[in-house]
Image 1: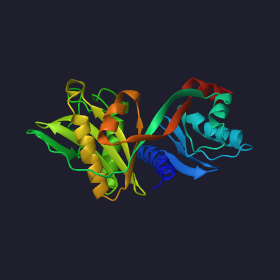
Image 2: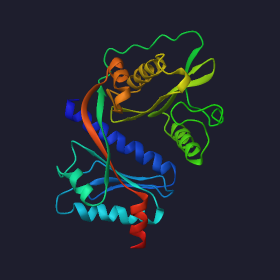
Image 3: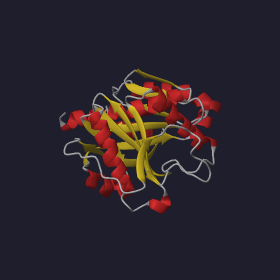
Image 4: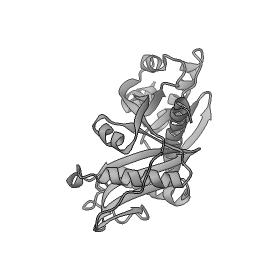
Length: 268
């Protein structure tokens, strides 16, 4: 794939990622009127992706989505990339009351030159197979300890998707002496491996575990048919991703319409 094709493929993968999770939690998802719209019915947050709207219809489509989400009391997130239309989509969202949260680089890996990493004694890598291994005392490396319903729901959704989509959804754990230390989740769509939920428990950070697990997950994705991988890079993790072979090739901005504004919309 050429550079633009890769960032487009990752944008589509990200939309599928959110749709899969929202559907797993009882929401709805569709692509109508020029965007991917995922409606969360449990207050977690609905989302808009692959925004391809014309100037004349922009406000009408966004208002429709906000009105649909309002009864459920959740915030609404808009994910705007360099491929979004109209070109001033970010400014238009702001004018409608969305707040600009963050902008990140999108990193791409072409999956060439990969080799499965050597594992030290006591280190194993396995797929997430059950919910009972995580608790208040044993945290998930990305989600954290199971102290809230939202965290338990997040792990339950991962487990459900891993079971229902064994050929394209992979939740990997790196364990030391049987204890989960690092995590990464991979979703493969049309040759693109989206990389999500990269995390390491606090006590084990800075020891190379995340890099080892990422390299393993990328090699497994290549064997499963992926030809490239993509992720959203937070600044503090960019050096890790570059060491593994990722390079910045696009960007994404997150905007949100808050729960408090949504409550006023319902009253209005």
